[in-house]
Length: 272
Ligand SMILES: [Zn+2]
Image (cartoon, rainbow, N blue to C red):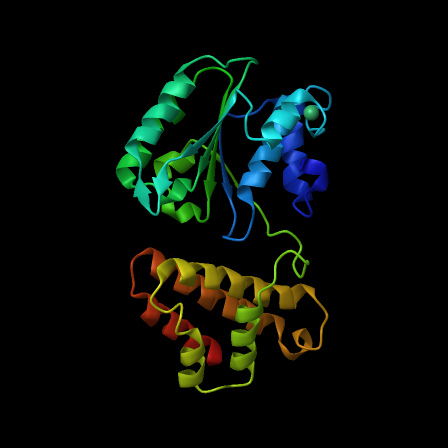
């Protein structure tokens, strides 16, 4: 995948293309996008556009550099998995810092892509800060994040932050059947106990709940774009209000409010 194949995000891609071809690439970025947005594919496309040998700014998929990135084995592109199931792996941060303190192997740039950067502990984020503050020339660090609110202000102040919009909804690729079913139950004013019963499987699982909230948000945002029978049943202001309830539940989960309580609260608010 290159920038050419990405659906949506045209403005963002144009800005990144301009920096690669003109103004110069900054040393640190945050790419934020919801659970379902393939942030890694986006970051890889950005890396291809930077390092491409034939079509700088876009990437080509046929030069050696683009092929290596596609296969995840480009010498100058380093992938850091700094957390595992929410636990920060200090040795991975060490490795990343050592890698970035060395010169690139083949080109002029070291690119590091840090997955799930926002699940790092505060301590780990502070360690990473040193690398962001004193990067070697040519370094590009890309932090992938579900939610930038989990990153410290000092990290954010040293990065250019971009929000990646979900790729066009209603695509074959991603279906939100469960979330649509819950939205339908809410629309039909089903009693809370029935909805709760249906959601039983996720109510105690924080990660599943976060995923559910991202799915719900997509289902509702979809209503604003699509012209289906269902979407005509909602007023735009109602949808915006619902989305704000979903965002509120997400914030509650992030600060550690009980999962079942946050979701119940949201369902009751949406149900009005
Ligand atoms: Zn290429």
